[in-house]
Length: 381
Ligand code: NZQ
Ligand code: ZN
Image: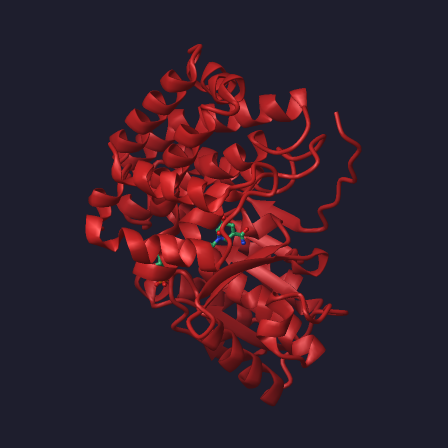
């Protein structure tokens, strides 16, 4: 086991009607609130009205920034930052999934430090402060509600990159599983895939960490047990609650403790697909993780086999890959590029961007030749 420091400052409020405490919590931070949300799902499912009802009791001034897209872009963060500074906002309230929350985290840093947003993302400037971020999560997937990561795309520089920073943890996150009842079958499945992929990044990280491997096993077993059930019965509280809690724990530090670092090669590959084709994050990962493991079974066969032993009770690397592929298909996720309508002729543009952006793992390094083999694997069943 490696040495580690456990740090997680987010207060997480989980359960039925958890957001009833929202006004109390926000009142600690101020009355000028920047409310950030996406493309309108919160208006259709009633979450917007519930949140506004809470804010009304505070006599707060609410400044709304909406329209944040899935696979969020830095342009929205620039605009939200300007709007927030103009209006002297004191706190940001993010209502949505990972895309809204990641945008809110970087808006918070940009407002507080008054520096260029992309310079922060590229770590050219070290942020010194933040304004508080409160999250009402509406989709179980990224773990952003309890971690220090935020991921944005920039179409000028052709990148989708993350900033991991201790200031990025939300101050408070509210998780009411009932808020996820309206998430579509597709995004429910992508969320399950994403949370599983997060544990794989840890599992293939540096060093040996027996208990963290067990956490990976437990989280995946929850995902594979309750995921299909939630897809069949989207308004079942227990199913949604178990998935939501699994997603938080898949990327809040739990699975990394005792390791040097996670790998994150699969995510780097997935970000290329999201950038080029706007593919939903979870859908990129089912394709990318299978391809990545096909390459790695030649190099770390015992480790790939070990994952299968934990998840399926199998003994070979091939069994791991086959069983994962079967599971991903069973929940409606793509397992090869053709499943998301990417043609053979597009291979060169995928590879070119992978090489341009130096797609790599933090533990398992990828050469140009490896990248090409991974792309070829992504075309295979
Ligand atoms: O835009 P709206 O109208 O809100 O609709 C969203 C969006 O279309 C919809 N949705 C969200 N909650 C809903 C709902 N629809 C009905 N009912 C609800 N309750 O779902 C769609 C997807 O939302 P999005 O926020 O994009 O999904 P997700 O939470 O999966 O976030 C994906 C983003 O997070 C990044 C990904 O790269 C991607 O950009 N990630 C962030 C991480 C982090 N901060 O730790 C780690 C991850 O690995 C990931 O990279
Ligand atoms: Zn992810």
